[in-house]
Image (cartoon, rainbow, N blue to C red; front, side, top):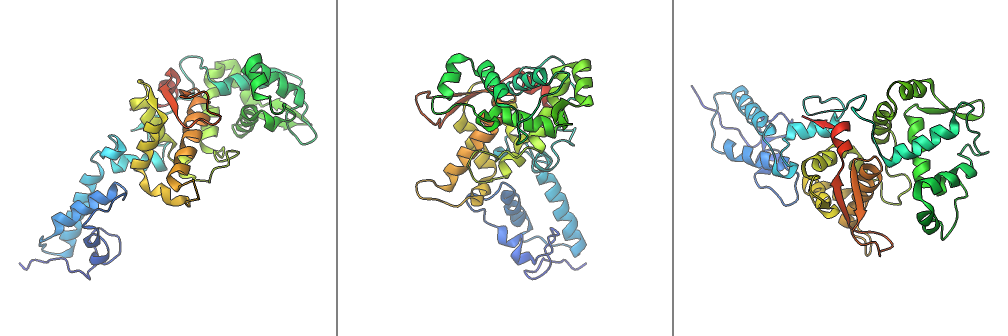
Amino acid sequence: MNKTRIGRNEPCPCGSGKKYKKCCLDKGETRPNEPAGAELFADLHQVLEGQEFASMDDAKSFVSGFMEQGNQAPVDDFHGLSPDQMSNVLNAPFSSPQLVSFPECLATQPSAPILTLFQLLVDAIGEQGLKPTAKGNLPQKFCRASALSYWGEETYKYNTRHGGINKEEDFFDLHVTRLVAGLAGLIRKYKGRFILSLKCRKLLADGGMAAIYPLLFRAFTEQYNWAYGDRNDEINFVQHSFLFSLYLLNRYGDKGQSSLFYEDCFLNAFPMVVNEVDDQPHWPAEKAIRSAYTLRILVRYADFLGLAKVESVDNEQLVASEYQVIKLPLLDQAVVFV
């Protein structure tokens, strides 16, 4: 039987549709900062070199088996996840029960900053509802009282030293809570007032905040735009990859880690994300990615949702550049990794 060697101009057996010379043959050398999958193609090139096959179908079958095996092998930069698992983490985070599950009701009543603010909102709405401003926002008096209750007197004075709370957006955490609660279908406007939805009232009656939290978590994760209000570039991939960051927190968070550690993990796993941002004078793309990542994933997500405690390393700095991060018990309840 005649043996077949893959020609440079033949279709690549990996199934890409490209010529072999433009696909796996061209990936023989792994370049710095390429995604982890490039190593798999480099290995494929090595095993194909000098191989002879009885037919192109045999070649495709060989490549298919090789790729399947490689896609199921853990990758160092993915911290134990395989390419197949990473694909699910990125593209099907809420429908991959073989990797992770998200309970609809938590085992115990949770504690988180977003829940503290949501409870203030629930109490203010009550049975009669809460009348919004002419622009449809929460009333000033309620925002000021909520900020004082949430921050305490000393922090309230510090946070308002350059200007008071005159509108909802001036107390940004409350503003975000109201938006996310609306996205979750827990509050809405009816006849000119904020009211609690029937779903919200039932969940509170049946399970309390243990039943409310999963809805706030999912709405914040999937529907709320994390780039809103932080003055960074869009960099949507930071939000898209949320589950990988929670996986890292679950894996390493029992011991306090610097925010720089999580930034490094993110950039090592996804080096190409730097290409989403243009270098600016005194503000290179990598620094912009690191800033957005820490602010969005660690400070405004993990900390605000009570999944981790995130504290500034240097409280003397006006804008913190490094934080100490430690996992909180709520992460294990809300996000259950297999």
